[in-house]
Image (cartoon, rainbow, N blue to C red):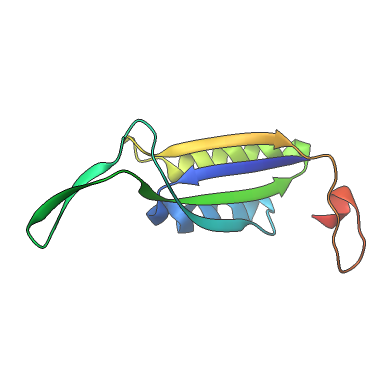
Length: 112
């Protein structure tokens, strides 16, 4: 099993979710996060005063899938989240040793 974690622009969330549904992804976790990469923040104007925002709003998506589905999920996220501009985000793929559905006690692939 793989944990796929993607950091994307917030307005791309619905497109990513819609791209994952046909692949059979039945659940995902979404968190509102802040961060920066090469963008190094941005300058904004509020009530006539200019100030620098160091951390930009992003969305973190986490989804656990079987090994055979992982590459398709990564490709779907890449296509749906792509804008071609700086700050499109990153995708990380990690191995998962065990998954347990608390309600039923199902393990690993059955728990997904």
